[in-house]
Length: 406
Image (cartoon, rainbow, N blue to C red):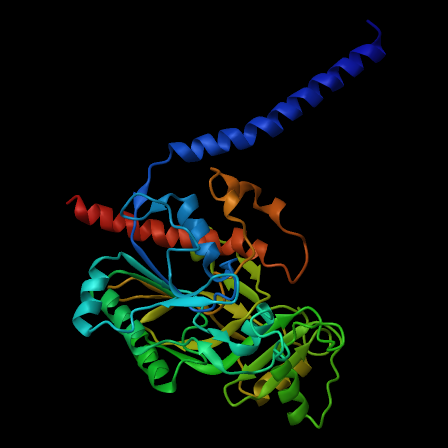
């Protein structure tokens, strides 16, 4: 055999081995996942911002539950389309609502007895303009309005009963995970203050979001109300053409920091201290290009991660003028004797696919599922959200398992 033929044969063998690996690896990962024991955990999920049947606002939580084989008391897996409370669109322009508004205080306590954990995702809700644009066939002769314009609320905001249920969970020392948006609009001021007092935190009134392009002629995701408010407050001038961060206050004040002009790093970055990086398995620095709220917390909570805004001298001046901090909590947890976590962002809203959940060690291949762009959110899921949630739930499950076996 000539040297050339030997080389060709070696290359063929290598190609065959690679092909076998490509075919067998997913099969092995699925088999290994199947060998993991089911773990019963009753989770109350509340999501009021479900515009369509993608269920994206709570899909990340379902992925974590399914991947780690946390199941309902029946032994069945959680499904994003059925296993939550809140707003249920049918995908054709109609909807139903499933909530706990008719419960008495006694019924709320009894209801809490049936669950181990409560996760409130997005309570921002559904508004008329977004709904009418999603389903224009409902009223074809009516102008649905422009996406991003403010309009009437169909359903949303934290209610007294939903806060009452959290208090019942807290009293029973059951796991509570809440995130933005639970206390910003449309939640009432009265309920916001009650929530803040109950869980030892305070909202500053500011929310924010990164936009990869602030040019109003190009980026159609810029909310119309945000643009209009800024124009009204700044002599009808909108000078922004680059990426940047928009801050919005409950007073309707809009403050914008632009890349290069005000920002050294254009996107907010979540920084986690080394002890928590090791414990929760998250990365030390994680860009966060979506909605967040600016909160403060008391000493009864500890800050696990913080947002950092990398502004230059000009940006610092703008932030000082409006009393907006450059660093503020991203993840907090209670130091007291009940398990409580607050995520100061839209953490569970990520474009992930449930079909990847049933493969052991799939997180090792997370880098294959996102592009290297500033605005993508898949990397946040793989590098931050899913390891964080896994550790939180695993800790709680194990502590309760230990108590039950004593």
